[in-house]
Length: 326
Image (cartoon, rainbow, N blue to C red; front, top):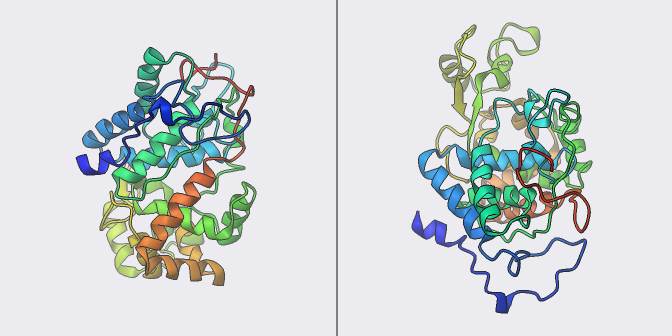
C-alpha cells in the first residue's frame, strides 16, 4: 500500500511552480505557491479512510461524478440541506448511497488550519476521487485545479441530470453528451462500476418483477439471478442490504466489469444496455480485452469530467466549511 500511496505524493516545490496562474483556467500544481501541501493532505485523509473502509474509494469517485453532473464540478453535492432548502445530497439518487463526506470534511479542516481560505471544496473532491482511483490500483493522473465552490444546491436538479440505474443506452448517451462527454467516454466511465457496492433496492425490480412480469430480466444470467435473489430476498425490510457490483474484485479497478457485462452479469439495466448498441458493444469488447487501454482511457475521462462547467477566477467562493455556503 505504501508503494501505491507514494505514487500520489505530490512534491510541490515552489521553485518548480508556475509564477503566474492564469485566471479562468484550471492548472496542474495550482496550489504550489499558495498551499504546497494541499494534494498531500487530501491523499493522506483518503488513504487513512480507505485503510479502515475500502468502500470509501468508490464512494468518493461516485460523489465526484454526481457533483460534476449537477451544476458542474462545484462541490454543490457537499452542501447540507436547510429548513428552507433540500440539497442535492438528500435526493433519493444520493441518500443514503453516497459515502465519504467525512473524508472531505477532515481534509478541509486540515487545509483551513494551514492555508485558510485557499483550497476549494471542489478541488478537494477532485483530488480525493483521483486518489481513490489509485488506491484501487487504477492509473494515477494529474488533476488540473483552480475550481471554486458553488453557492446553490437543489434536490430538484438531480434526477434531470444524473442517469439512473434503469437508464437505457439512449438516455445514458444523451445525459453524457449534455455534459460534453462522448458515447465512448460514457462507456469508459461506466467502468467505475468495477468497484463498490449497490443497495438491493436499486435493482430489485430486475430480479423479481422486471417490467411487471413477476419474473427476472431475461437478459440476466440465470445463475446470477439466483445469487442476487439469495443476497437480496424479496420483501426484505432491511433497506441497508448491499451487494458488490463486481463480485470477483470489488475493490480493484479492472476490466472485470466489462467481462461481466458481456456474460450478462451487469448489475443494472444501465450496465446491460451497453450491449444493445453497436458502438457501445464495440467499446465494451475493446475494454474487456485490454485492461491497460481502459485504465488509460478512464484516467483521461476522469480529467475531462472534472472540468465540466467549473467555476474559476472570481466566480463562486472558497467555502470555509464544505457543508455550508459562506
